[in-house]
Length: 254
Image 1 (tube, rainbow, N blue to C red):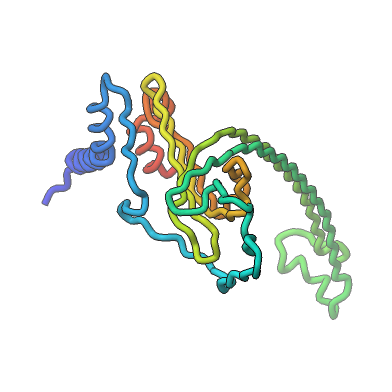
Image 2 (image 1 turned 30 degrees about the horizontal axis):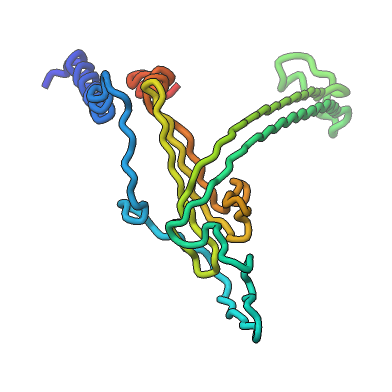
């Protein structure tokens, strides 16, 4: 059997092209079908019926029994004399305020230096020191038999600067009430402007007492918060590298 390097190279190129086409086929078809049309908004669905939905499970304290006060209209644990209008049941809606303004600056510097010097001599060794010239190619001075020195110096510097600022408000729905009274919320928002769509989603766990009288809660009061803010459209396509460039960047080992 004769090995043909050109045929082998062509086979590898064909395999690489097939992989690239397979990776981009689905998304490319969607982009072609959306030419001349605005990005389609997602439908409003019950998230608990979505494929792969898993109810939230968290460690729970033992349930507390309500204490009835005799001759009193007030119940222990109530937040108001009249019915509270804040979200408290599955399906209720509240507003999540996301205001992120994080800044971080880190600077590190490490310096290290070391100097070593070692001398060794062999002036007397049973008289054999005078015969060293018979074993070594050049003349040897027993008083300066070994001399070593080394210098080491290291200087490392590192700097990190980060700044993030996000200000958003999104309505979320209570999708689950945990046994201890905490509630799981989920909110999604889609906005299309000039052939570009912005998607915002937020999920997490809140306490009923953290909901303000205006039926709002801030993002820093949400446990296990998951906030996603992205988009799809013409601007996003321009900002993304081409499929070939992404594939080359993944496969290139250097």
